[in-house]
Image (tube, rainbow, N blue to C red; front, side):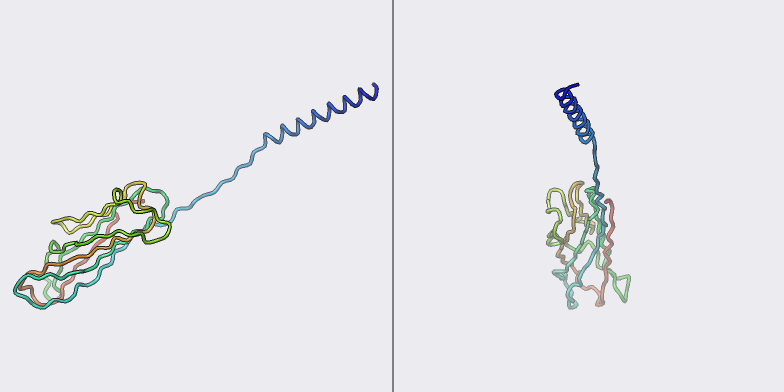
Length: 182
């Protein structure tokens, strides 16, 4: 074998070795992964007292009571949720047989607000509060794909107090239930 044949053979062997090495490298793979852990779902209810009223022979209205429902959906699964707030009659503290019917509570203003940065924007078509006209129950729903984040539902309420209502303090209880959700 002459020098030329030796060089050609050596070059051919080098090309074959290089192509085998490159082919081997092209077939190698590596994977990477990340897990996004879901957070919590919570809801809370708060209310303020109405201003005191004097005794009256005629009906009167206690105005501008405040009720707030706060919902926080940090689960990351976008299943939507339904919250129900049921309001009991206002029962006399010293005479429990005396009541102001919960139907006398009228929600006069409702405002939804985002409570935390990064929350999904409010879409009124898919995040709906509904207050019963004859049944004092509030239902607040976020459709699937909506309501991811933290929100406040701020309500102003008036209470019609019938004339000749006995003089005493009256107490109502709001019960919050998570009907559906993550």
